[in-house]
Image (cartoon, rainbow, N blue to C red):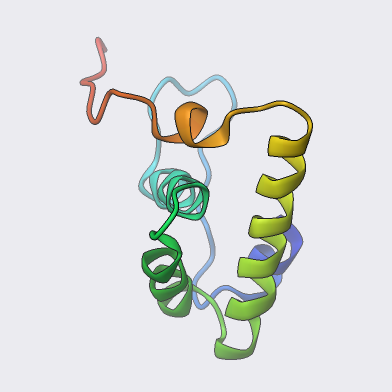
Length: 95
């Protein structure tokens, strides 16, 4: 999925370095995609977001890769909707 995103994005994804304590805008978009794919009924929103980010022919394969990844994580015992969506919607950084 990340390989497809890296090669098929309309614009380059900007990811913060590991020691950074703030989530970048592009990272927030990726987190939103994972959340939307993990929630029933939200895949239409995720696919619409992907259509804005990736080359048209790649949005479907990226969506399939994300769905497959989430299915495998769920099969391995991870409760993905709870882990991805959580109960907190926003938190300010202390820095």
